[in-house]
Length: 223
Image (cartoon, rainbow, N blue to C red; front, side, top):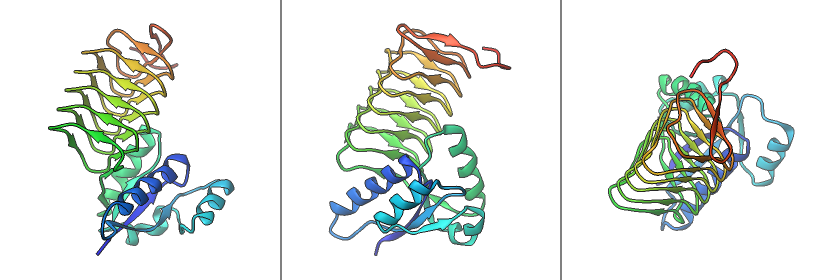
C-alpha cells in the first residue's frame, strides 16, 4: 500500500518534485507514494492553475494543515535553502516525517548516503562515497563528484558541477551551470552564482560569481 505524501511548495521545484514522485511510482509494481496534495501559504494564480491542470489538490497553507501533516510523510519543494530550513523545522516539530525522493533516471555510485527530506532529480550523476545532508536538493543534470559532502539544506541547481572531495556547508545554493573545483570548501549560507567557476575556498555567507569566481559580500555581513 502506498504511503501518503504531502509536497510543500506549489512553485517550479514543487511541481518538479511531483514529477520525481510520478517517476518513482511508474517503475514500481505497486505505487510507492500516494500524493495527498500540495501545501502552500500563498501560491500564485498560475501555480494554482498548473496544479489544477494535473489534478493535484491544493490543500492551503501549512498552519491550516497542521493536523494532516502530523505523522505524514512530506517533502519541501522550495528552492530557497533558508526558507526550506524554516519550514522543515516547523512541520517536523508537529510530527511530519521527511521523505527521501530519488528519480529513477539518476545515476548513483557506491557508498552514497542521502539523508531524509532530500530530492534528487532526473539526469543527476552522483559519484562514489558522496554524502547528502537532510533536505538537500539536486536539480536535473547536476553532477556530484566522488567523496563530496553536501550539508543540510544545500541546493545544487541544474547543470552545476561539484567536483570530487568538495565540502558544501549548510544552506548554500550552487547556481545553474556553476563549477566548483576539486577539494574546495564552500561556507555556510553562501551563494555560488550561475555559471561561476570556483577556484578557491568560499567563506560563509558570501556570493561568489564570475570566472574565476570572486566574492561579493551582502550588505550588513562580513566574510
